[in-house]
Image 1 (cartoon, rainbow, N blue to C red):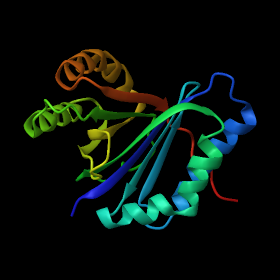
Image 2 (image 1 turned 45 degrees about the horizontal axis):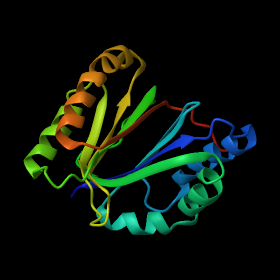
Image 3 (image 1 turned 120 degrees about the vertical axis):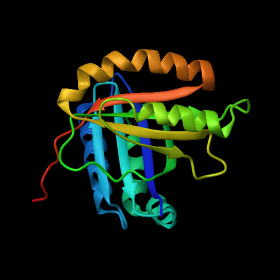
Image 4 (image 1 turned 180 degrees about the vertical axis):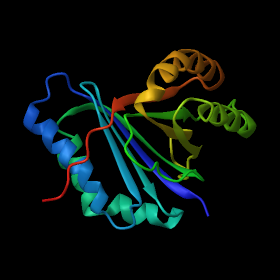
Amino acid sequence: MPRILHLIAASLKPDADAAGLGDARSLAEGLRAADGVDRVVVGMSAEHLVVATWLPAPEALEPFAASPAHMAFIMKGLAPVIQRMWSAAVETETPPPEGERDALWAFAIGSAETMFEWQVRDLLAEAHTLPGLAASGPTVEERDRYRAGGVVALEARDRPAFEAALPSLLVRWSDAAGSIEHAIAPVIERREEP
């Protein structure tokens, strides 16, 4: 049975205050306490907050989305400090990464009507050729504005090769799909619970 990968990528306000950013980070980390979560990896830079949440099965998505932890993250964590955000829930066969990661690159492929399913599958296959652990798949919600999405979890040693390969991949994807959303952010160190 496929897993669900729930992605959120937010562009942070340049003038967001430190307390608000700290709240957003804490509430993102708090997603680990939501029912049914397998793993949450959080990345944060001066420009972006990226959250990748692995759920064990499609039926776990709705309870996760309605959970107090998720609602608090969206309403109290993100809303005060972001300019815009995008999210996608995709089916994937890839389990969450083991061990620590250095950075997350999240992406979503637009729902251009001119794209065939085989073209979407080809684009997703390209993500798996990038350095790092890629988890990707088609979106699961009919009303989603994206056809597919995913994340690449990078180790420090992957970053130079990844950054060299990414520009040409984005050009090919934009030519094929039109709209592409993406964001990269360093993984924040996991804080231990007191």
